[in-house]
Image 1 (cartoon, one colour):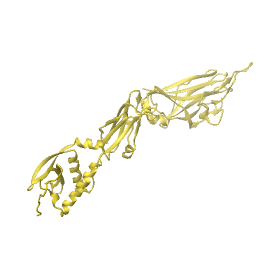
Image 2: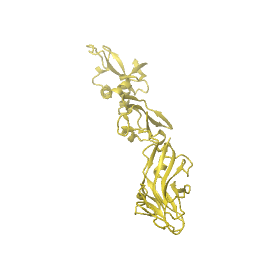
Image 3: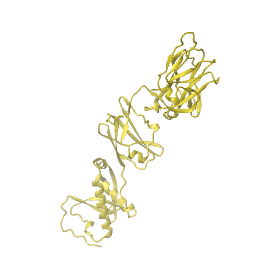
Image 4: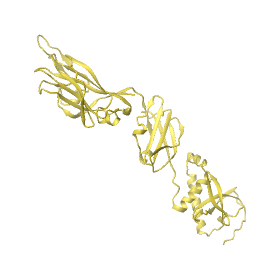
Length: 380
């Protein structure tokens, strides 16, 4: 047994001494010791104590490298630890802040040879579409088992939220924000970010509140049966630009000019066009009505019908028959619910939706046409 000699009291008020715990005899903790008390640091040739000193050095360095917010959180932590006071007698010491952190760090280094795994410290900004900070509230939740738990937060400045205790290795993460006059397009029920995604997530965008949004044709869909004044059918109905030259003299019909799709009397049955549309920029999950607007008309020869057609979930659905007058007229077909699910529209359904126009021409001459077609989403 080495002899301990106290030659001179240490200059500092106190230092850390290392002890083994009574639990299995393999764990290591530390306690605060006063100057002048016997210390294990006098055993300079002990390999075990050298490892303990090295672990203490690494633990101290780890604490020194913590961010100010991490140190502030650490100072609030208090726990009881067990140690051998003297002659194998076990005692309890209440440790807090730096002492507690270093104690746990030493234990981790001694048992796993790895440093303590700290939570992620994430800073996420609540911003508008132009990345300007918004005055509002931002939440971050993580999935633990089957329960969504909220991560503690602190607002550093307007729009800048710090989540210093974000746990690692969770199944999913969900940020969600609120600000006056804005809404979050990513509601908690519709998003799940992975661990890598949340680590790279720096800006949470909110959008201005709107009552409605227009979706325009961007491509041909699964059905292309109508005739068109040019080869690209969806461009023919993107804008209302068709003109009409009325009949002159004793003629029975005039004719259309510009861009449009149309149907003649042959073949003698209804035909349709389907189109793809731009995706909604706002919160499609808040839709209370989807409306298909179209402009249809005919020449002066009588008879002809027009109605909308939708394709969703692989099925087609038709709107109410309209009888366009001579020249042209605007119509609206409302779809408050998805006709296939009979439920409110979801963002995914709107993104995959195809819509278009069905036309039928009765008689041997003239045409029925569609000049313009678009979708209008009405939000709650």
